[in-house]
Image (cartoon, rainbow, N blue to C red):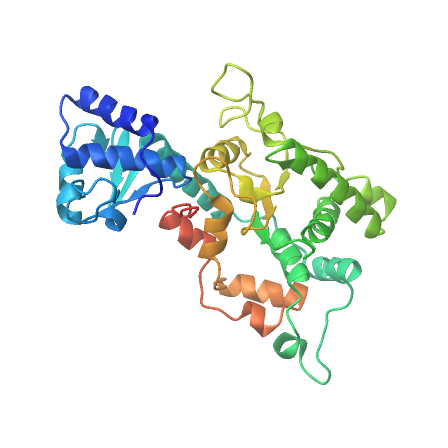
Length: 366
């Protein structure tokens, strides 16, 4: 059942599309109103299968959605509905999912951007140096008494996350309050700055001003706690900013200062409270990211959902619930982080890459 009654905005969109198309039956108008309603509730699309054959609004007993196949065929024949890869249209039908056109475009842009990140190899890593750095910053590799550390020790997720962030261009670190996300990322920044010989342009950002202020405080505290060499600590920035300020959004202008044609001037971007990233902002961010840059997303996928449609962090984490790393990456993890079998044993493949291939951000908030 649909959550809540249709809003005036939903009805207005439905009627506007009928006028634009010059036609529109009840099934088409219902779909248009529902996709507007669900987008307003945080979904990026309308799952037609969820509503097909039902009465979406029990208070209106005569209003029933068609069977799924009939509904899809009716929508595909409507002139205001486009197809994936086709000409821009107000609505896009992708299989059994109906989108507002801008959100379908944003979802595809995010998928392409993430795929580009995970498929572009990171600079070569001196694994012996990385292992030494991990031991210096995280302590000796934990082992179980009398056992091989790669098979019996409990997973050290902070150490493994740090190794992954160095070995790859894209890393997502998710965890609840107090799990050490900022503690870990401060050490990641130290490792990467050291590996780059001190030539690393780092930016810290968050979706809101409050989140940026918290990130600033957390990084300062974590940097001091890590007891880094002063020269290395100086390479780690303390000040975070909002993503809107970073990208250069300006009043009255749709396009920010930084975009694909004028990318950000940085080598590494860390985004905290990434659960608040909506689909369109993530698309803007990825478009403005230089081809050679790294991206680290921090957050708790269970908290602080985005205000606008899309739940990027939750969808990415949902795709990667079952570890699925390539054999070379598993070998690198075992060699550098001493990652136990519980961490590295999995089927070949990259979870984010696989997810992006099939629509990595095609989730729902509720």
